Length: 350
Image (cartoon, rainbow, N blue to C red; front, side):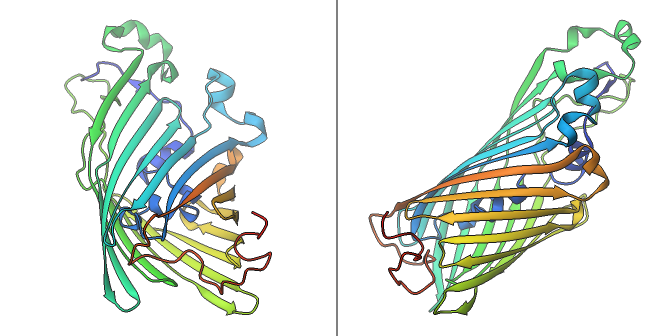
């Protein structure tokens, strides 16, 4: 719907960065749950997985430097969470879904991505999975958190065109491929193949009703990722897993994430990540139990934006479900010797 008003969204630099760079808020969560990156990863492990992720970007100094917080009493903290599940139901087929929630200032997005994947053996120890998902986006725009550039302009426009909340639904498609074995993986995915209009966010004019609208669309995203599991010593079962993620859109320059995990017996791991484009360093900790996973991430920004947004906390809780059937063409969860000592990937007393 065309607007006849000129709005200024009093928003943070973090939101501006997301608008012009990456619309899909994955951040550090993919290090705990790589299914968020690529639909082809669905069902490629020997157990079924349920993961819950939550990430909150906190204001520096309790919000003291935030214009939104002090002037308009608007909470500008971006909040991202997700619920995902994937299950193999055949030696070659899997299904799953990602349900994501993202809130930043006036815009709230809920994204449901039902997923189907097909995997096959290429060689003795190399598998290929192809996956597709069909995301459906629900978007809510809260006009109560939109501020006028000049409050005096309020008298010059007909506010009858503006509702308190505007909502809309849009859809698209994602595709991915994933090469993997027990040590190595390489993946490529495209999200928002169909660049649909984002219904629910006003298409703002430049103040003249005759001017063309600036249409909000779901832009196409590309992801290229790979990792390798290096075993240091089979006796002590130490491993190092470097990971690289390259992400880009057709409107932005490529962005690179470099990650490194140090794992002991697949029971506990510590890691770090460096996101060059945003000058963010992340510290991570993960603990594996027999049926559960717990992860924590702490992002520290070293960019000029850190005056307002310095840290972000992420929490992940996972649940593993054993498949009733031992499906083929999957990655084994435990890649160390099955030594049933107290520090095998879960303690004996569980």
